[in-house]
Length: 446
Image (tube, rainbow, N blue to C red; front, side):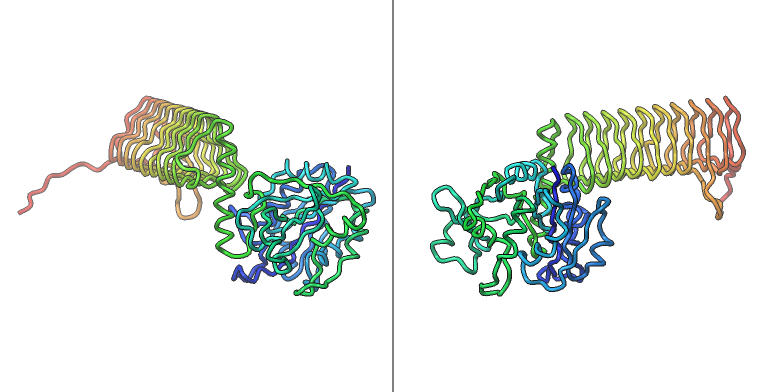
């Protein structure tokens, strides 16, 4: 079954108080419109038709779309019905159509599939219930059948008491849509062509109207201003956290955790408050992620413990590693199993073998470190010579004494030792003790 998805994205978003079109307002570090595109792209055999208005070039350049996406201009903003009309000639013969909104980003793909499936030979409508439905179009029924939708400004006092409201998301065949849209009139207070009028037109044309009523209103939350955008942001992160909890993860507080990208989270892992997970990140099973930690574009193996306020970016962390607190790992770092990176340790562009430890106040840059190496407090891999970054290689079993400076390029052999306070400028063979510090002199003060 072919599915043509019309995404309405032409609104100015004046109430956002921004210079950018509303659909480019960010939710979890991604434009609202991008969320809608990503969800609709999951529908098999689908083609996207995105209707844009003011700032259309900026919108096109700010999102990623599937191959074959059709961009349509609505030069005059004359209402949602008028916007859909601009897309009619682009619809494929025999296709189902789904009408979406670029500022309603949380609709679940399962909901959309259900809506499309019951829209065949009918008109299907996504509805939900609100105790205080002010601002929403009300669903008018005769018996159990939908007869029409009345907008807030056009509703009578009695109609305003109706709690079932319109999401605006509709599915029907291209054939039916092409019959109904041209019949919409602008006889209303705003002189606009309302898409909601297709409901009454469907009734008049004896087209069956079916509804999918949502249990949760979070799916159809939109954003017209910064306050609503903030509510949308929180709902987004809570939704994801709750899905992870269904799969066995747990949280200190689902209201204080954020997922800003494509994230997976393993069973029995725990995230404390104010954790941020960004980009394409994978957290394994039985992990502990401490308060304030940031994980960005990284893979965290099973059993890893990340202590509070640590940052891990563009890195791979092996099983049962311990990170932090206040550690910075990455970019381009690879840690084998059971590595310990402790307080105020920074690791960049380096590989560390299993059971290696750097537990206090160290900098490891452009290093290749073997297994079971101890890197003492205050150690620095001096990797930059003013022109380029140089590599330091440390063999397995080596011991690097505290407050050492390793001047790259440098090789330190297996099971060797570096005395505390040394400045090492020459390669150290295996099983050797290197001392690179000046002789102590005790001078008389007076």
